[in-house]
Length: 147
Image (tube, rainbow, N blue to C red):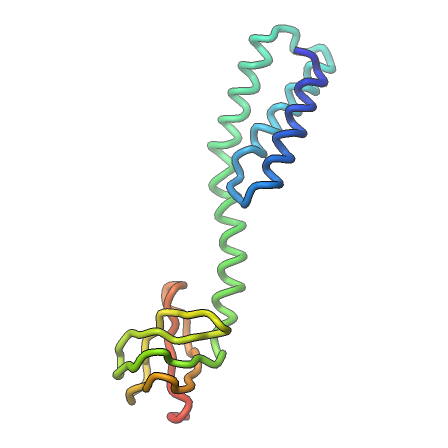
């Protein structure tokens, strides 16, 4: 194949990756296409079968070795900043909860599953404070009146 075909394919795949939400699939194929295009430009790869074979192998190897660590790094930074910053925020209970019970509360305009860690019950509509994040998806709250 002609070298500029591979470069064009690589740029097209990179554009597709940029326009899709965070899956990190196409970028590895884009890198492989750009590398094969560069090697063809330098006249290192002459055979079409060798070019397609190298493209396939490079794409799958990069996908297998780099996708999971890249996704973990991206998700870890996003999750830790967003959820951990909720500690100390004001929460309004949307359901009545006894001590140790689970329920729902609104924090920053979003509904969350919460657990009442206070010794007193929390009534619906009562103001509370987020005291901890449990497991990333559940918040521990304590009533404002117990302060």
